[in-house]
Image (cartoon, rainbow, N blue to C red):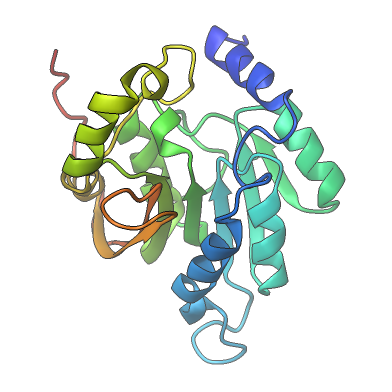
Length: 229
């Protein structure tokens, strides 16, 4: 059954050029940082006699699935939107693409991937722990989880409160989570990840557009956290 949330993202992806990476000036930087983060999986010989497997979680129309394939990885993508996956399949024929919610059990075996990438996705997620726990499950022990999400530091938050509150927190915008470094670290650690690298993307500190974060799977996820409210 298609829920209102699924229907919302079908409408979201029906508008061409709406989401990253379409028309975003930071896409090339994201690609450069991702390639650097994944360099341990790009070796032609050594630990990996097969191409390393990578998942783009929330792949949209497949820009980064194609990029990871170009790097020599065995890349797959998943997105909640049928429309997005249909377009991704048109752009990247033969790619392993799936429709599914990151907050539900993913259609992959435990430890299926060496790395997971997710760009500008987790701010759209209702159940962040369920999402991170599923990404942990499908990663092998020691696998990498790299993501980007909008940056919310103290100074930027103060600026938003003063000059852009209504626009930034527009209830018809799809962002529902607003991460600081502290809160994102807590979510990652509770889901079994250890953050290794933080980098700002877009503009300069303290007004970065997004975080680029690389973490490693170090344990199984903790139990679902208590819901506060």
